[in-house]
Length: 245
Image (cartoon, rainbow, N blue to C red; front, side, top):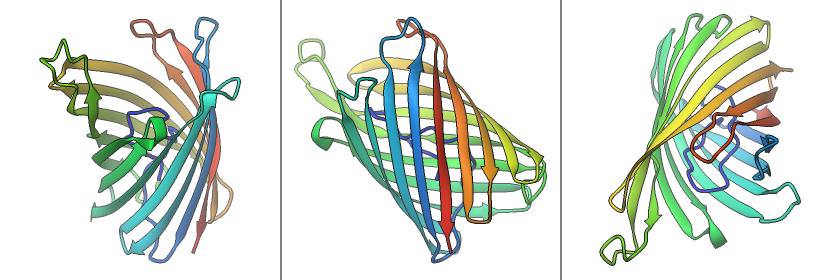
């Protein structure tokens, strides 16, 4: 699936790849593992893993179920999230296509935080078979609960809030079954209990290798840009996608 619109921790793995629905009746299995926070000035290092299983319901429409586990570098402070979503491709041309998503997820302490996240991905492919280069824009609008200080918010303890997540990216096919991907992520949060906040995110560089028609290896490095009290940091992630017709 290679996407997630979750904003609570832990976040699903940032897998660099364009989104494609699966054939009707096909099963998709994805497994990723990552380590974030490589920096001499960063004390917040985290290990994470994600598992996703998807199913092609009909032509150009699929559903998936995913779960993520995360802990610190000492294997403590464990957290989990689980999400269910569906996506389809209403527009599919030789060089342009549009994918629409809807995801429901639980996270936070004892899976007490609920979130709804609609989204979309717009793709441009110079070659219809993705054998050259292309660009994409992924956009998500997660809607979630925001906690607040009752004294600073007129006695209101919580309210709904939303974020706008933007992921522009591009890919280059350097050889048969070999792709390099570059992606940037940023977000804008807004809610009635707090002012707007922007996160400049960072850049990820991916190298994906298709071993066969059924298995693809996903590898990437993520550079988190410095912002406020957060220093620059590196993260790495590796995994695979297996398709079962």
